[in-house]
Length: 129
Image 1 (tube, rainbow, N blue to C red):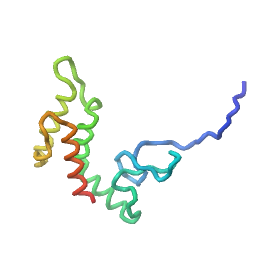
Image 2 (cartoon, one colour):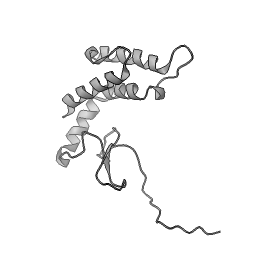
Image 3 (cartoon, rainbow, N blue to C red):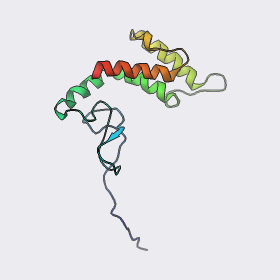
Image 4 (cartoon, rainbow, N blue to C red):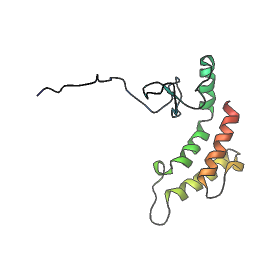
């Protein structure tokens, strides 16, 4: 049985990561409106291509802080909760301890991973941009 394709099949592998070489952040801003263009993270988007490597290096230097940002935003990927202790509680304790070890305990907001993640983003803006 033959299958007729109305549209050509795209053989390109798609990822959700930034298209800047070496960047490990998610690409959230696109260069086109059809959804098929390249996507970049907030730091590489509309930046000067000549300084992309410098931006990527700064992002890599802040990898530990980015990990805590991921733990705030997606705790279910890092922790297994049970009936007594949820993954939100585990993430909150880990992020609190981690930020304290980095000397950034002023970024932590008790029992509020959302506000903590916003504080981490502000810190990353200051460090990277």
